[in-house]
Length: 132
Image (cartoon, rainbow, N blue to C red; front, side, top):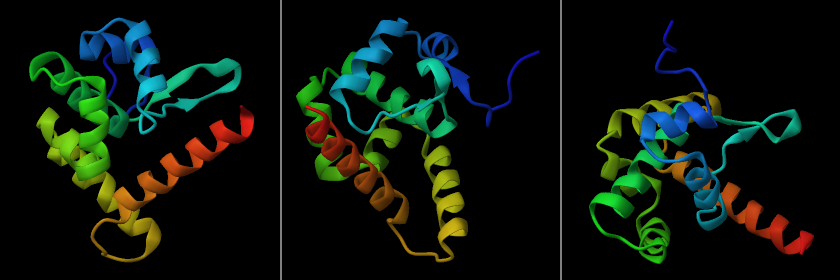
């Protein structure tokens, strides 16, 4: 039985869906602070549908459009996650997640979802600095 579109994916399922090896997904986590799958006990990764959409955009930019890792990092910094998801052609996924964020935050303000990701990215960077 196949998983539904809203189901979380293991790293092997995500790798199969994106047609990249698992070690590439792990490597991208080290290079892109915005790629943060949920981790359960024992470090097992679970990718949300929004994670898959972002990964699909990163894969397309790197493999199909010839961007470098630094180029994708710069694109994210300058244009945000929306640009990465757009690269994947999966605007529907970002809109779905924005709708969930708006519902949780009680407002219809543009950019809340991207602001949340920016804050999470900043927190991850601070945590990394504190742990080094």
